[in-house]
Image (tube, rainbow, N blue to C red; front, side, top):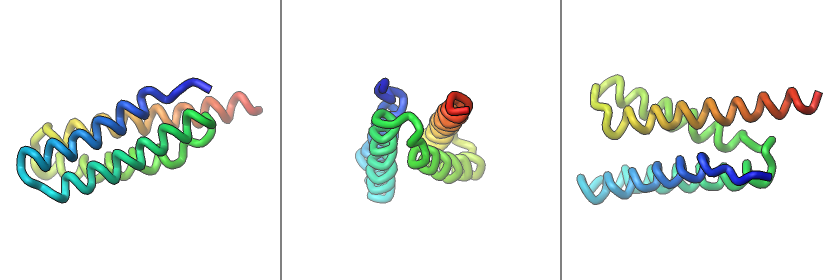
Length: 108
């Protein structure tokens, strides 16, 4: 099985964004959310690396984070950080769903 490099990069970016939010603005909410979602995304990348059919955690994390940050971007009209995270989440969601659909067609 190939390693889900994009999943791990996504997880690291989410966690790093939470840490940066804490360091820049003192936001413990950003720190907590970044570490929780980053950790879940890292676990999702690990599970996808072990079994390419096991994409459900990554789909859930990227969809949830994408919707939350997309809503914040819509309200605030500031690309950083909410627009960037929403865009990364959308890309990760598309990659995960694409991988799931590819696996389904291989099994037929």
